[in-house]
Image 1 (tube, rainbow, N blue to C red):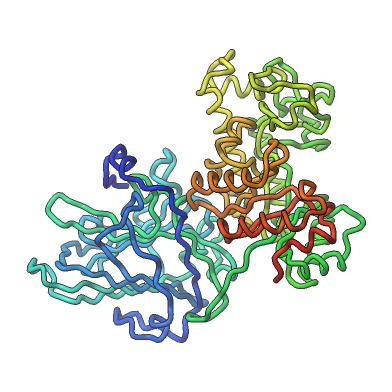
Image 2 (cartoon, rainbow, N blue to C red):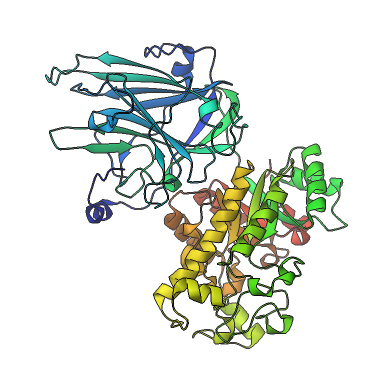
Length: 571
Protein backbone atom coordinates (compact mmCIF):
# COMPACT_ATOMS: atom_id res chain seq x y z
CA UNK A 1 0.00 0.00 0.00
CA UNK A 2 2.82 2.40 0.86
CA UNK A 3 5.97 3.37 -1.01
CA UNK A 4 9.09 3.45 1.11
CA UNK A 5 11.77 4.47 -1.42
CA UNK A 6 11.48 6.13 -4.80
CA UNK A 7 11.53 3.37 -7.41
CA UNK A 8 14.58 4.75 -9.21
CA UNK A 9 16.54 5.02 -5.98
CA UNK A 10 15.53 1.50 -4.99
CA UNK A 11 16.73 0.16 -8.34
CA UNK A 12 20.09 1.89 -7.93
CA UNK A 13 20.52 0.44 -4.45
CA UNK A 14 19.49 -3.10 -5.40
CA UNK A 15 22.39 -5.58 -5.01
CA UNK A 16 22.91 -8.71 -7.06
CA UNK A 17 19.85 -10.97 -7.11
CA UNK A 18 19.39 -13.13 -4.03
CA UNK A 19 17.33 -16.26 -3.62
CA UNK A 20 14.11 -15.98 -1.68
CA UNK A 21 14.68 -17.16 1.92
CA UNK A 22 13.24 -20.46 3.09
CA UNK A 23 12.03 -21.82 6.43
CA UNK A 24 11.19 -25.31 7.60
CA UNK A 25 8.03 -25.05 9.70
CA UNK A 26 7.98 -27.81 12.32
CA UNK A 27 5.36 -28.87 14.84
CA UNK A 28 5.19 -27.31 18.30
CA UNK A 29 6.41 -29.26 21.30
CA UNK A 30 3.40 -29.06 23.57
CA UNK A 31 0.95 -26.22 24.26
CA UNK A 32 1.91 -22.57 23.78
CA UNK A 33 0.51 -19.89 26.10
CA UNK A 34 0.07 -16.65 24.18
CA UNK A 35 1.45 -14.31 26.83
CA UNK A 36 4.40 -12.67 25.09
CA UNK A 37 6.95 -14.38 27.35
CA UNK A 38 8.31 -16.95 24.85
CA UNK A 39 9.30 -19.32 27.68
CA UNK A 40 7.93 -22.54 26.16
CA UNK A 41 10.36 -25.28 24.99
CA UNK A 42 9.03 -24.75 21.46
CA UNK A 43 10.56 -21.29 21.21
CA UNK A 44 13.91 -22.46 22.52
CA UNK A 45 14.08 -25.23 19.91
CA UNK A 46 12.49 -23.56 16.86
CA UNK A 47 15.05 -22.13 14.45
CA UNK A 48 15.04 -18.37 13.86
CA UNK A 49 14.38 -17.01 10.39
CA UNK A 50 17.31 -15.59 8.44
CA UNK A 51 18.13 -11.90 9.18
CA UNK A 52 15.89 -9.10 8.00
CA UNK A 53 17.05 -6.83 5.17
CA UNK A 54 15.73 -3.71 3.54
CA UNK A 55 13.39 -3.99 0.55
CA UNK A 56 16.29 -3.86 -1.91
CA UNK A 57 18.05 -6.75 -0.16
CA UNK A 58 20.75 -4.66 1.51
CA UNK A 59 21.63 -5.22 5.20
CA UNK A 60 19.51 -3.27 7.68
CA UNK A 61 20.34 -2.04 11.20
CA UNK A 62 16.86 -3.14 12.32
CA UNK A 63 16.98 -6.71 13.57
CA UNK A 64 14.42 -9.30 14.63
CA UNK A 65 14.50 -12.81 16.04
CA UNK A 66 11.45 -14.44 14.43
CA UNK A 67 10.50 -18.09 14.94
CA UNK A 68 7.53 -20.21 13.94
CA UNK A 69 5.84 -23.48 14.83
CA UNK A 70 2.44 -25.04 14.28
CA UNK A 71 -0.05 -27.61 15.54
CA UNK A 72 -3.37 -28.89 14.23
CA UNK A 73 -5.14 -25.70 15.31
CA UNK A 74 -2.81 -22.77 14.77
CA UNK A 75 0.26 -21.28 13.17
CA UNK A 76 2.42 -19.73 15.91
CA UNK A 77 4.76 -16.75 15.41
CA UNK A 78 7.15 -15.30 17.97
CA UNK A 79 9.26 -12.19 17.39
CA UNK A 80 11.81 -10.39 19.56
CA UNK A 81 12.31 -6.88 18.20
CA UNK A 82 15.17 -4.79 19.58
CA UNK A 83 14.32 -1.08 19.79
CA UNK A 84 15.97 1.82 21.63
CA UNK A 85 12.73 3.81 21.82
CA UNK A 86 9.24 2.37 22.25
CA UNK A 87 6.39 4.39 20.80
CA UNK A 88 2.75 3.65 19.93
CA UNK A 89 -0.49 5.64 19.91
CA UNK A 90 -3.08 3.70 17.90
CA UNK A 91 -5.62 1.80 19.99
CA UNK A 92 -8.51 1.08 17.60
CA UNK A 93 -8.54 -2.21 15.71
CA UNK A 94 -7.97 -1.88 11.95
CA UNK A 95 -6.31 1.49 12.31
CA UNK A 96 -3.49 2.10 9.83
CA UNK A 97 -1.06 0.45 12.22
CA UNK A 98 2.14 1.08 10.26
CA UNK A 99 1.84 4.76 11.22
CA UNK A 100 3.22 3.45 14.52
CA UNK A 101 6.28 1.23 14.77
CA UNK A 102 4.87 -2.22 14.08
CA UNK A 103 5.44 -5.89 13.27
CA UNK A 104 3.74 -7.39 10.19
CA UNK A 105 3.02 -10.94 8.98
CA UNK A 106 1.97 -11.80 5.41
CA UNK A 107 0.70 -15.24 4.34
CA UNK A 108 -0.04 -16.50 0.82
CA UNK A 109 -1.30 -19.94 1.91
CA UNK A 110 -1.67 -21.45 -1.56
CA UNK A 111 1.42 -19.74 -3.04
CA UNK A 112 -0.48 -18.33 -5.99
CA UNK A 113 0.16 -14.60 -5.57
CA UNK A 114 -3.48 -13.84 -4.79
CA UNK A 115 -5.92 -14.18 -1.88
CA UNK A 116 -3.34 -13.48 0.78
CA UNK A 117 -3.52 -12.30 4.36
CA UNK A 118 -1.87 -9.51 6.32
CA UNK A 119 -1.60 -8.91 10.06
CA UNK A 120 -0.03 -5.81 11.63
CA UNK A 121 0.44 -5.21 15.37
CA UNK A 122 1.92 -2.30 17.28
CA UNK A 123 3.52 -2.04 20.74
CA UNK A 124 0.12 -1.47 22.35
CA UNK A 125 -1.07 -4.79 20.89
CA UNK A 126 -3.49 -3.09 18.50
CA UNK A 127 -4.19 -5.25 15.44
CA UNK A 128 -4.93 -4.52 11.79
CA UNK A 129 -5.90 -7.69 9.91
CA UNK A 130 -6.93 -7.68 6.27
CA UNK A 131 -7.53 -9.97 3.31
CA UNK A 132 -6.24 -8.99 -0.16
CA UNK A 133 -7.61 -10.58 -3.30
CA UNK A 134 -4.50 -9.50 -5.26
CA UNK A 135 -1.45 -7.26 -4.86
CA UNK A 136 -2.18 -3.54 -4.84
CA UNK A 137 -0.61 -3.19 -8.30
CA UNK A 138 -3.51 -5.23 -9.70
CA UNK A 139 -6.36 -2.87 -10.69
CA UNK A 140 -8.84 -5.53 -9.52
CA UNK A 141 -7.31 -5.78 -6.03
CA UNK A 142 -9.76 -5.67 -3.15
CA UNK A 143 -8.27 -5.07 0.30
CA UNK A 144 -10.90 -6.18 2.82
CA UNK A 145 -10.04 -4.11 5.90
CA UNK A 146 -13.11 -5.24 7.85
CA UNK A 147 -12.12 -8.92 7.54
CA UNK A 148 -11.17 -10.34 10.95
CA UNK A 149 -9.09 -13.38 11.90
CA UNK A 150 -11.53 -15.39 13.99
CA UNK A 151 -9.91 -16.88 17.05
CA UNK A 152 -6.75 -14.80 16.70
CA UNK A 153 -4.69 -14.55 19.91
CA UNK A 154 -1.85 -12.08 20.34
CA UNK A 155 0.31 -10.78 23.17
CA UNK A 156 2.91 -8.01 23.36
CA UNK A 157 5.44 -7.45 26.14
CA UNK A 158 7.68 -4.40 26.39
CA UNK A 159 11.28 -4.31 27.47
CA UNK A 160 11.24 -0.63 28.36
CA UNK A 161 8.79 2.20 28.90
CA UNK A 162 6.31 3.21 26.23
CA UNK A 163 6.24 6.75 24.83
CA UNK A 164 8.99 8.16 27.06
CA UNK A 165 11.34 8.91 24.17
CA UNK A 166 14.51 8.46 26.22
CA UNK A 167 16.26 6.10 23.79
CA UNK A 168 17.23 3.65 26.52
CA UNK A 169 14.60 0.94 25.91
CA UNK A 170 15.59 -2.62 24.94
CA UNK A 171 12.75 -3.65 22.63
CA UNK A 172 9.46 -5.50 22.48
CA UNK A 173 8.19 -9.05 22.01
CA UNK A 174 5.22 -10.32 19.99
CA UNK A 175 3.53 -13.73 20.22
CA UNK A 176 0.76 -14.78 17.81
CA UNK A 177 -1.56 -17.78 17.50
CA UNK A 178 -3.22 -17.62 14.06
CA UNK A 179 -5.92 -20.31 13.55
CA UNK A 180 -5.59 -22.39 10.40
CA UNK A 181 -9.32 -21.84 9.85
CA UNK A 182 -8.46 -18.25 8.87
CA UNK A 183 -5.45 -19.27 6.76
CA UNK A 184 -6.44 -22.36 4.78
CA UNK A 185 -10.16 -21.81 5.33
CA UNK A 186 -10.69 -18.87 2.98
CA UNK A 187 -11.37 -18.38 -0.74
CA UNK A 188 -12.16 -21.72 -2.44
CA UNK A 189 -11.59 -23.63 0.81
CA UNK A 190 -14.24 -22.24 3.17
CA UNK A 191 -14.43 -25.33 5.40
CA UNK A 192 -10.72 -26.14 5.59
CA UNK A 193 -9.45 -25.59 9.11
CA UNK A 194 -6.42 -27.85 9.23
CA UNK A 195 -2.77 -27.22 8.44
CA UNK A 196 -1.57 -28.04 4.93
CA UNK A 197 -0.03 -31.46 4.45
CA UNK A 198 3.67 -31.92 5.28
CA UNK A 199 5.76 -30.97 2.25
CA UNK A 200 3.36 -28.20 1.26
CA UNK A 201 4.86 -24.75 0.70
CA UNK A 202 3.32 -21.41 1.60
CA UNK A 203 4.71 -18.01 0.67
CA UNK A 204 5.24 -15.70 3.66
CA UNK A 205 6.92 -12.45 4.56
CA UNK A 206 7.58 -10.48 7.73
CA UNK A 207 8.25 -6.82 8.20
CA UNK A 208 9.05 -4.39 10.96
CA UNK A 209 8.26 -0.74 10.38
CA UNK A 210 10.18 1.89 12.35
CA UNK A 211 10.03 5.68 12.44
CA UNK A 212 13.52 6.86 13.42
CA UNK A 213 12.44 10.52 13.19
CA UNK A 214 9.24 12.46 12.42
CA UNK A 215 8.31 11.99 8.76
CA UNK A 216 10.75 9.08 8.31
CA UNK A 217 9.81 5.44 7.84
CA UNK A 218 11.93 2.34 7.37
CA UNK A 219 10.62 -1.03 6.19
CA UNK A 220 12.77 -4.06 7.04
CA UNK A 221 11.66 -7.42 5.65
CA UNK A 222 12.53 -11.12 5.69
CA UNK A 223 12.19 -11.57 1.91
CA UNK A 224 13.33 -8.53 -0.10
CA UNK A 225 11.00 -7.80 -3.01
CA UNK A 226 13.47 -5.51 -4.86
CA UNK A 227 10.52 -3.15 -5.27
CA UNK A 228 9.29 -0.16 -3.28
CA UNK A 229 6.57 -2.30 -1.72
CA UNK A 230 6.30 -5.52 0.23
CA UNK A 231 3.14 -6.42 -1.72
CA UNK A 232 4.91 -8.59 -4.29
CA UNK A 233 4.08 -12.12 -3.05
CA UNK A 234 5.98 -13.74 -5.91
CA UNK A 235 9.16 -12.63 -4.08
CA UNK A 236 8.16 -13.70 -0.56
CA UNK A 237 9.95 -16.44 1.33
CA UNK A 238 9.08 -20.11 1.06
CA UNK A 239 7.79 -21.88 4.16
CA UNK A 240 7.65 -25.67 3.91
CA UNK A 241 5.64 -27.66 6.44
CA UNK A 242 7.28 -30.60 8.18
CA UNK A 243 5.74 -33.46 10.15
CA UNK A 244 8.68 -33.37 12.59
CA UNK A 245 8.74 -31.62 15.97
CA UNK A 246 10.74 -28.42 16.45
CA UNK A 247 14.44 -29.03 16.85
CA UNK A 248 14.49 -32.19 14.75
CA UNK A 249 17.37 -32.07 12.25
CA UNK A 250 16.07 -32.54 8.71
CA UNK A 251 18.21 -32.80 5.61
CA UNK A 252 16.41 -32.10 2.35
CA UNK A 253 17.80 -34.41 -0.35
CA UNK A 254 17.98 -33.10 -3.92
CA UNK A 255 15.17 -33.85 -6.32
CA UNK A 256 16.16 -36.31 -9.04
CA UNK A 257 13.35 -36.08 -11.57
CA UNK A 258 12.72 -38.38 -14.51
CA UNK A 259 10.31 -37.73 -17.38
CA UNK A 260 8.45 -40.93 -18.29
CA UNK A 261 5.57 -42.04 -20.50
CA UNK A 262 2.79 -43.59 -18.45
CA UNK A 263 1.40 -45.17 -21.65
CA UNK A 264 4.56 -47.24 -22.20
CA UNK A 265 3.75 -50.98 -21.93
CA UNK A 266 7.24 -51.65 -20.58
CA UNK A 267 6.62 -49.46 -17.52
CA UNK A 268 5.99 -51.82 -14.59
CA UNK A 269 6.08 -51.80 -10.81
CA UNK A 270 9.53 -53.37 -10.97
CA UNK A 271 10.68 -50.51 -13.22
CA UNK A 272 9.64 -48.04 -10.55
CA UNK A 273 11.45 -50.02 -7.86
CA UNK A 274 14.61 -50.02 -9.98
CA UNK A 275 14.43 -46.28 -10.58
CA UNK A 276 13.91 -45.54 -6.90
CA UNK A 277 16.84 -47.76 -5.94
CA UNK A 278 18.98 -45.87 -8.46
CA UNK A 279 18.20 -42.52 -6.83
CA UNK A 280 15.18 -41.19 -8.73
CA UNK A 281 12.89 -39.29 -6.34
CA UNK A 282 10.29 -37.80 -8.70
CA UNK A 283 8.45 -39.06 -11.78
CA UNK A 284 7.17 -36.57 -14.34
CA UNK A 285 4.47 -38.62 -16.03
CA UNK A 286 2.91 -37.92 -19.41
CA UNK A 287 0.22 -39.93 -21.15
CA UNK A 288 -3.47 -40.60 -20.81
CA UNK A 289 -4.94 -39.50 -17.45
CA UNK A 290 -6.04 -43.07 -16.64
CA UNK A 291 -2.50 -44.37 -17.19
CA UNK A 292 -0.99 -41.50 -15.22
CA UNK A 293 -3.33 -42.36 -12.34
CA UNK A 294 -2.40 -46.05 -12.53
CA UNK A 295 1.35 -45.46 -12.53
CA UNK A 296 0.98 -42.83 -9.79
CA UNK A 297 -0.72 -45.44 -7.59
CA UNK A 298 2.15 -47.83 -8.27
CA UNK A 299 4.68 -45.12 -7.43
CA UNK A 300 3.12 -44.53 -4.03
CA UNK A 301 2.83 -48.24 -3.31
CA UNK A 302 6.45 -48.93 -4.33
CA UNK A 303 8.15 -46.59 -1.92
CA UNK A 304 6.58 -43.18 -2.13
CA UNK A 305 8.04 -41.72 -5.32
CA UNK A 306 6.78 -38.18 -5.87
CA UNK A 307 4.62 -37.92 -8.99
CA UNK A 308 4.13 -34.87 -11.20
CA UNK A 309 1.54 -35.03 -13.99
CA UNK A 310 2.89 -33.69 -17.28
CA UNK A 311 0.42 -31.79 -19.49
CA UNK A 312 0.96 -30.29 -22.94
CA UNK A 313 -0.50 -26.79 -22.80
CA UNK A 314 -0.67 -24.56 -25.89
CA UNK A 315 0.46 -27.35 -28.22
CA UNK A 316 -2.46 -29.80 -28.32
CA UNK A 317 -1.88 -32.37 -31.11
CA UNK A 318 -4.96 -34.43 -31.94
CA UNK A 319 -6.93 -32.85 -29.11
CA UNK A 320 -10.52 -33.77 -30.09
CA UNK A 321 -12.02 -30.74 -28.36
CA UNK A 322 -9.56 -28.29 -29.92
CA UNK A 323 -10.22 -29.81 -33.36
CA UNK A 324 -13.87 -28.81 -33.01
CA UNK A 325 -12.82 -25.15 -32.75
CA UNK A 326 -10.85 -23.89 -35.76
CA UNK A 327 -10.87 -20.37 -34.29
CA UNK A 328 -8.88 -21.58 -31.27
CA UNK A 329 -5.76 -22.17 -33.34
CA UNK A 330 -2.70 -19.95 -33.69
CA UNK A 331 -2.16 -18.13 -36.99
CA UNK A 332 1.19 -17.26 -38.56
CA UNK A 333 2.31 -13.97 -40.08
CA UNK A 334 1.60 -15.64 -43.43
CA UNK A 335 -2.02 -16.10 -42.32
CA UNK A 336 -1.84 -19.90 -42.01
CA UNK A 337 -3.57 -21.62 -39.09
CA UNK A 338 -2.27 -24.62 -37.16
CA UNK A 339 -5.74 -26.11 -37.49
CA UNK A 340 -4.66 -27.66 -40.83
CA UNK A 341 -1.87 -30.25 -40.47
CA UNK A 342 -0.31 -29.16 -43.76
CA UNK A 343 0.02 -25.57 -42.46
CA UNK A 344 1.74 -26.39 -39.18
CA UNK A 345 5.37 -25.25 -38.72
CA UNK A 346 8.21 -27.77 -38.56
CA UNK A 347 6.24 -30.93 -37.70
CA UNK A 348 2.67 -32.17 -38.03
CA UNK A 349 2.13 -32.34 -34.26
CA UNK A 350 2.66 -28.57 -33.79
CA UNK A 351 -1.04 -27.90 -33.30
CA UNK A 352 -0.58 -24.69 -31.30
CA UNK A 353 -3.54 -22.82 -29.89
CA UNK A 354 -4.08 -19.08 -29.49
CA UNK A 355 -3.09 -17.94 -25.98
CA UNK A 356 -5.59 -15.05 -26.02
CA UNK A 357 -8.76 -17.03 -26.75
CA UNK A 358 -10.95 -17.45 -23.62
CA UNK A 359 -12.16 -20.84 -24.85
CA UNK A 360 -8.56 -22.06 -25.02
CA UNK A 361 -7.84 -20.83 -21.53
CA UNK A 362 -10.91 -22.47 -20.04
CA UNK A 363 -10.16 -25.73 -21.87
CA UNK A 364 -6.62 -25.78 -20.46
CA UNK A 365 -7.85 -24.98 -16.98
CA UNK A 366 -10.29 -27.88 -17.23
CA UNK A 367 -7.53 -30.26 -18.32
CA UNK A 368 -5.42 -29.05 -15.40
CA UNK A 369 -8.24 -29.62 -12.94
CA UNK A 370 -8.76 -33.14 -14.30
CA UNK A 371 -5.15 -34.13 -13.67
CA UNK A 372 -4.95 -32.32 -10.34
CA UNK A 373 -7.97 -34.31 -9.13
CA UNK A 374 -5.97 -37.57 -9.27
CA UNK A 375 -5.32 -38.23 -5.55
CA UNK A 376 -1.85 -39.72 -6.01
CA UNK A 377 -0.60 -36.78 -8.11
CA UNK A 378 1.61 -34.44 -6.10
CA UNK A 379 1.97 -31.60 -8.63
CA UNK A 380 1.32 -30.49 -12.21
CA UNK A 381 3.96 -29.66 -14.84
CA UNK A 382 3.06 -27.59 -17.91
CA UNK A 383 4.87 -28.23 -21.17
CA UNK A 384 4.67 -26.33 -24.47
CA UNK A 385 3.50 -23.27 -22.56
CA UNK A 386 4.70 -21.10 -25.43
CA UNK A 387 4.21 -20.32 -29.13
CA UNK A 388 5.99 -22.13 -32.01
CA UNK A 389 9.72 -21.54 -32.37
CA UNK A 390 10.22 -18.19 -34.04
CA UNK A 391 13.92 -19.03 -33.61
CA UNK A 392 15.00 -22.66 -33.39
CA UNK A 393 18.07 -23.67 -31.37
CA UNK A 394 20.92 -23.15 -33.81
CA UNK A 395 22.00 -26.78 -34.00
CA UNK A 396 18.55 -27.62 -35.42
CA UNK A 397 18.66 -25.14 -38.31
CA UNK A 398 20.27 -27.64 -40.72
CA UNK A 399 17.62 -30.23 -39.85
CA UNK A 400 14.96 -28.00 -41.42
CA UNK A 401 17.19 -26.27 -43.98
CA UNK A 402 16.63 -22.88 -42.32
CA UNK A 403 18.63 -19.81 -41.41
CA UNK A 404 16.66 -18.19 -38.58
CA UNK A 405 19.01 -15.27 -37.96
CA UNK A 406 16.21 -13.06 -39.31
CA UNK A 407 12.48 -13.33 -38.69
CA UNK A 408 10.73 -15.80 -41.02
CA UNK A 409 6.97 -15.19 -41.47
CA UNK A 410 5.91 -18.88 -41.57
CA UNK A 411 7.21 -19.34 -38.01
CA UNK A 412 5.96 -16.16 -36.32
CA UNK A 413 2.65 -16.64 -34.41
CA UNK A 414 -0.07 -15.58 -33.30
CA UNK A 415 -1.65 -13.21 -35.81
CA UNK A 416 -5.20 -14.48 -35.39
CA UNK A 417 -8.04 -11.91 -35.47
CA UNK A 418 -8.57 -12.13 -31.72
CA UNK A 419 -4.92 -11.35 -30.90
CA UNK A 420 -4.80 -8.49 -33.41
CA UNK A 421 -8.01 -7.00 -32.00
CA UNK A 422 -6.76 -7.35 -28.41
CA UNK A 423 -3.47 -5.69 -29.35
CA UNK A 424 -5.37 -2.90 -31.10
CA UNK A 425 -3.54 -3.01 -34.42
CA UNK A 426 -4.72 -5.14 -37.38
CA UNK A 427 -1.25 -4.99 -39.00
CA UNK A 428 1.40 -4.86 -36.28
CA UNK A 429 5.05 -4.49 -37.18
CA UNK A 430 6.55 -7.96 -36.58
CA UNK A 431 9.64 -6.23 -35.10
CA UNK A 432 7.67 -3.97 -32.74
CA UNK A 433 8.76 -4.66 -29.11
CA UNK A 434 5.24 -3.84 -27.92
CA UNK A 435 3.80 -6.54 -30.18
CA UNK A 436 6.32 -9.05 -28.87
CA UNK A 437 5.50 -8.03 -25.30
CA UNK A 438 1.79 -8.49 -25.98
CA UNK A 439 2.37 -12.12 -26.92
CA UNK A 440 4.69 -12.68 -23.97
CA UNK A 441 1.94 -11.40 -21.68
CA UNK A 442 -0.71 -13.63 -23.26
CA UNK A 443 1.41 -16.75 -22.86
CA UNK A 444 2.18 -15.81 -19.26
CA UNK A 445 -1.54 -15.31 -18.60
CA UNK A 446 -2.25 -18.86 -19.80
CA UNK A 447 0.53 -20.27 -17.62
CA UNK A 448 -0.73 -18.40 -14.59
CA UNK A 449 -4.34 -19.42 -15.20
CA UNK A 450 -3.36 -23.10 -15.37
CA UNK A 451 -1.09 -22.78 -12.33
CA UNK A 452 -3.89 -21.14 -10.36
CA UNK A 453 -6.27 -23.96 -11.36
CA UNK A 454 -3.78 -26.54 -10.09
CA UNK A 455 -3.23 -24.71 -6.81
CA UNK A 456 -6.98 -24.25 -6.31
CA UNK A 457 -7.12 -28.06 -6.38
CA UNK A 458 -4.35 -28.17 -3.77
CA UNK A 459 -1.52 -29.12 -6.14
CA UNK A 460 1.65 -27.10 -6.85
CA UNK A 461 2.36 -26.27 -10.49
CA UNK A 462 5.57 -25.89 -12.48
CA UNK A 463 6.61 -25.84 -16.11
CA UNK A 464 9.15 -27.22 -18.54
CA UNK A 465 10.68 -24.10 -20.07
CA UNK A 466 13.48 -22.98 -22.36
CA UNK A 467 16.88 -22.52 -20.67
CA UNK A 468 16.53 -18.91 -19.49
CA UNK A 469 13.74 -16.32 -19.60
CA UNK A 470 15.87 -14.23 -21.97
CA UNK A 471 16.35 -17.06 -24.47
CA UNK A 472 12.79 -18.28 -24.08
CA UNK A 473 11.32 -14.84 -24.78
CA UNK A 474 13.40 -14.49 -27.94
CA UNK A 475 12.84 -18.00 -29.26
CA UNK A 476 9.26 -18.97 -28.34
CA UNK A 477 7.57 -15.94 -26.72
CA UNK A 478 7.97 -17.48 -23.28
CA UNK A 479 9.25 -15.09 -20.63
CA UNK A 480 8.92 -17.49 -17.75
CA UNK A 481 10.07 -14.90 -15.23
CA UNK A 482 6.45 -13.70 -15.54
CA UNK A 483 5.02 -17.11 -14.65
CA UNK A 484 3.70 -17.66 -11.11
CA UNK A 485 5.21 -21.12 -10.70
CA UNK A 486 6.11 -23.37 -7.80
CA UNK A 487 9.07 -24.82 -9.73
CA UNK A 488 10.59 -24.79 -13.20
CA UNK A 489 12.42 -27.40 -15.27
CA UNK A 490 14.56 -25.47 -17.78
CA UNK A 491 15.37 -27.74 -20.72
CA UNK A 492 19.13 -27.20 -20.76
CA UNK A 493 19.74 -29.44 -23.75
CA UNK A 494 23.20 -28.17 -24.68
CA UNK A 495 23.50 -30.23 -27.86
CA UNK A 496 20.47 -28.43 -29.34
CA UNK A 497 22.51 -25.23 -29.15
CA UNK A 498 25.78 -26.77 -30.36
CA UNK A 499 27.17 -26.19 -26.88
CA UNK A 500 28.72 -28.24 -24.06
CA UNK A 501 28.35 -28.77 -20.33
CA UNK A 502 29.76 -25.38 -19.35
CA UNK A 503 26.96 -23.77 -21.35
CA UNK A 504 24.46 -25.70 -19.21
CA UNK A 505 26.03 -24.39 -16.02
CA UNK A 506 26.17 -20.83 -17.38
CA UNK A 507 22.50 -20.92 -18.36
CA UNK A 508 21.60 -22.29 -14.92
CA UNK A 509 23.39 -19.36 -13.28
CA UNK A 510 21.66 -16.89 -15.59
CA UNK A 511 18.23 -18.36 -14.90
CA UNK A 512 18.80 -18.40 -11.14
CA UNK A 513 19.88 -14.77 -11.21
CA UNK A 514 16.86 -13.75 -13.27
CA UNK A 515 14.34 -15.65 -11.15
CA UNK A 516 16.09 -14.56 -7.93
CA UNK A 517 14.58 -17.32 -5.82
CA UNK A 518 10.97 -16.73 -6.82
CA UNK A 519 10.69 -20.52 -7.30
CA UNK A 520 13.08 -23.49 -7.41
CA UNK A 521 14.82 -24.28 -10.69
CA UNK A 522 15.69 -27.88 -11.56
CA UNK A 523 17.65 -28.02 -14.83
CA UNK A 524 16.62 -30.69 -17.30
CA UNK A 525 19.39 -32.74 -18.93
CA UNK A 526 19.05 -34.49 -22.29
CA UNK A 527 20.21 -38.07 -21.68
CA UNK A 528 21.03 -38.88 -25.33
CA UNK A 529 23.78 -36.25 -25.09
CA UNK A 530 25.63 -38.55 -22.70
CA UNK A 531 24.85 -41.95 -24.20
CA UNK A 532 27.29 -44.31 -22.49
CA UNK A 533 29.44 -41.66 -20.80
CA UNK A 534 28.39 -41.86 -17.14
CA UNK A 535 31.56 -40.10 -15.95
CA UNK A 536 30.67 -36.96 -17.93
CA UNK A 537 27.06 -37.06 -16.72
CA UNK A 538 28.17 -37.63 -13.12
CA UNK A 539 30.56 -34.66 -13.28
CA UNK A 540 27.83 -32.38 -14.64
CA UNK A 541 25.34 -33.53 -12.00
CA UNK A 542 27.84 -32.85 -9.24
CA UNK A 543 28.52 -29.39 -10.65
CA UNK A 544 24.78 -28.67 -10.89
CA UNK A 545 24.13 -29.73 -7.28
CA UNK A 546 26.97 -27.53 -6.08
CA UNK A 547 25.29 -24.55 -7.76
CA UNK A 548 21.71 -25.70 -7.28
CA UNK A 549 21.08 -28.02 -4.29
CA UNK A 550 17.38 -28.31 -5.17
CA UNK A 551 18.16 -30.95 -7.81
CA UNK A 552 17.81 -31.69 -11.51
CA UNK A 553 15.71 -33.70 -14.00
CA UNK A 554 16.47 -36.17 -16.78
CA UNK A 555 14.81 -36.51 -20.20
CA UNK A 556 13.76 -39.14 -20.53
CA UNK A 557 13.23 -42.62 -19.04
CA UNK A 558 13.60 -44.39 -22.40
CA UNK A 559 17.23 -43.19 -22.51
CA UNK A 560 18.17 -44.00 -18.92
CA UNK A 561 20.44 -46.93 -19.67
CA UNK A 562 21.92 -49.17 -16.94
CA UNK A 563 25.23 -47.45 -17.63
CA UNK A 564 23.86 -43.93 -17.14
CA UNK A 565 22.02 -44.98 -13.99
CA UNK A 566 25.44 -45.27 -12.36
CA UNK A 567 25.86 -41.48 -12.65
CA UNK A 568 22.92 -40.68 -10.35
CA UNK A 569 23.47 -39.63 -6.72
CA UNK A 570 22.56 -42.55 -4.51
CA UNK A 571 19.80 -42.19 -1.89
